[in-house]
Length: 81
Figure (cartoon, rainbow, N blue to C red):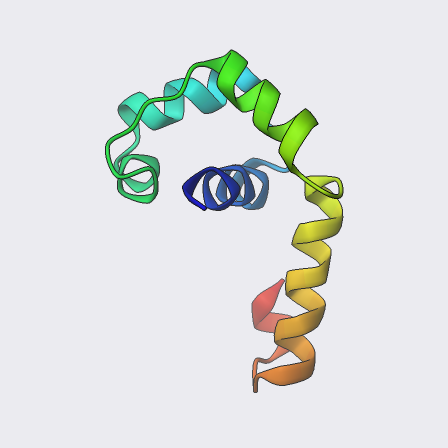
């Protein structure tokens, strides 16, 4: 679960992040360290996760989450974006 959250956070913050940058964020960024519970996967571990385990592109997951929040929560869309 942590890897999905990690990839989503990186996408939300940067729109795109390289696999090496993602691995670096897990080592040096406290937000990513917290999400990953101190684990520091390599860029190859993220590559395997993204290509083998995710059922859809991370962009689609991100957009689905935003649509869900807009539909089910009382969030002002102007603030959300």
